[in-house]
Image (tube, rainbow, N blue to C red):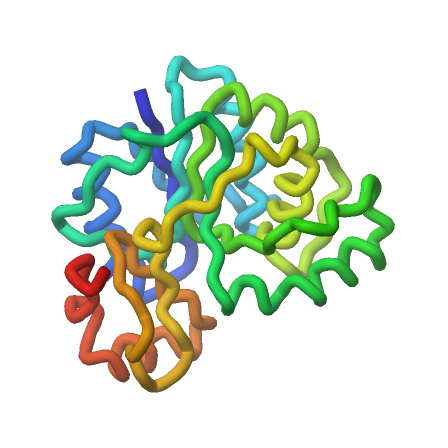
Length: 223
């Protein structure tokens, strides 16, 4: 069995747009969906630190895979199953907007004296969509120990922890499962996907949709 998680907090308009598509995708493929809310994360320094709780509960469950989808991800109505052809491991996507964070992330690791240091060939990943099998989750959960530092949500931490896994356990999630909308004013060169990720900050998400003619313009047929 497969479980899926998302976090919906605050009165954010994109939840009304995106959450129904996440619910529909999980329902079609009979995935168990857990929607985390403000109440679940009220005591956390960063709301998305909930990821560590998710891994712990997943390990204790009877499910084989755990999937995370940010609440600003819009899923195409015909999106297939995600894990049907995946080998075991931790799957996360990357793109130029993600790798641009790498220098700041390495400085963050150094400033917080995180040891062992991240491996030199680590490619910085986006945390908006990921998938992990149980055996890998057990290893990751053992690595993901306090302290955790606020100010960067969970993405810097997630990259650091994943960088400590054996290289054979970490895989690049294909872009169609986390198609990160570019911040430029053109779609030229951008490939859509099954999962469209509005990754701008709160102020610019609506502009992001408006500039590209509305979220329904994004299609996996652009792949």
